[in-house]
Image 1 (cartoon, rainbow, N blue to C red):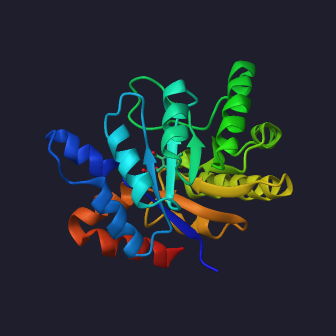
Image 2 (cartoon, rainbow, N blue to C red):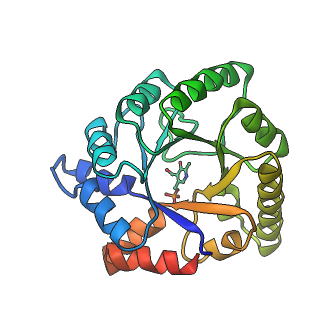
Length: 238
Ligand code: PXP
């Protein structure tokens, strides 16, 4: 069975915001990506709404109630949006001011754990699946399970930035061991960040991963090939 593909369409909105224009519309991108074989549409609602905004989330959740995977931080803003628009699932990610993109998994301080526990309970009451974006580290997986997450998304940023083959193989091994442990802990396993058409295969071969969430590589390739071809090509690799 092929892996599921979540296509992150944030950068369609980035392009729109470059001109503060009404297009390109992420809703169109979502429809095209799903028709081309994507299983989920992923959007990161940042607090500053620099690309995807609340209006996009409202429209996407209404149009695709079973396919929107909303990323947000452990903030009142993210929680309120999720509870209001009820995406299929929510992935809680760290969000640092001024960052270009998400820089790693959640850092589980006691204060964050307390906050996440409450947030997960509220999301579950609305029947929203909850994923936590984590580094492939055993202690963090155990915390995610204890907090009641349904899914962990393993951060592949370090793997995607590996400089040597040896380093990259070691990091794939870490992902494989983490995927195994996460499953033992009863968690569904996803992976994402920095994956592209060249580095995705080694992660796709790691057993136990159900879904890969990929954005930048697909959206940038689509500038030259068109979005349907870019999505189809990635889906065929999985
Ligand atoms: N997964 C998570 C949790 C992310 O924060 C991001 C980036 O928004 C992605 C996946 C997609 O990363 P990329 O755009 O590098 O494919």
